[in-house]
Image (cartoon, rainbow over all chains, first blue to last red; front, side):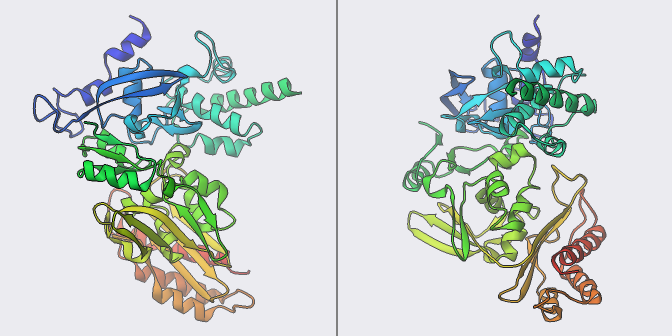
Length: 199
Length: 280
């Protein structure tokens, strides 16, 4: 079983959205077997990493994060808090860094979504991803996709960002291994690499 | 039949609301989606209003900034710090960068949370809201808009289109107390705006009452104490101002802080905001 298969086969999201189970945090599941009245369905197309992907008969309340992970086979964006606190689900939407758990997927129609999977070509790493590996910035790894998307956004927007700007830019990305030192080092490494490349 | 509409202008939005009368209006989604994710809300239908042409952009005029309801906090933080310093400072404390890129000023107003970071600024600035419905438009002072915890005078079928914030000449401060310097819901917050032309001091306070509140007794007291040419005030008057602000609030105890802590903290930040605004 590959890592992504494991991602798809279990985890909090399945339990949370499975209509036949009780939501462990207070939701009640579908009150009627059809679910049509309380969970109206919608069909639409999302643009993810440059490809138009159909989403068929999805509950209209589903978050972009859920649709990416559970319907579109893009499990790179991680699901942790589901309330915009942790940043592990960060994606770019029309070039803006957002928490995909707090975006209604059906309202992302017409927007260009870029996930961590789309930052480099298939099987390749972006300079930010490579720096995270080389600088030992990855511990448990759970926050890393969100960190990488957030820092990619900052480095593209503000190549000479200061230490404080960098800290502010990832103030919404939590690393519970508290591995921030190596993450900062990876950020500085990319800054140096890019500034040498420009020189 | 589709249960979500993504109209591009107000007329189409009103039509969508006719077709989907139970629809939830959706702007940035940062409040709404949390409730949906946790199973507390199940939208029967959605009218997404972030694309509405009438809700976009801002106009800077001599006396006010007219901000589209769909303008995000990131835009306010980055582009309006010169015109509306306290609102931009508040913007910078709204959630995380990810939240600020999606969350809108109109959504903050419509949600009307006691802890809404932008609201004390809008109250202190005497901002007004333009509300549009199929039947026309009305302008409501922000001070009359929020009636209770997450309760407003917004009627079914009405959409907030613009937030009009008067420009003032004078120092402005926004201070917020929380467990971190980022990414927190406020335990209390204060916006202090000084109008050197009108010679008034306005303070808006958040998370210390069911709605954002002003402190009128404190405001008129300190306005009479200030030497307006030097923009200074005696130290004991500044201290008294903080006490009067404390006396104006009726906070509750909740998981973020106790009533006693909030009363004390709001006194401290009100005093500090005034100290920072006055000449040494």
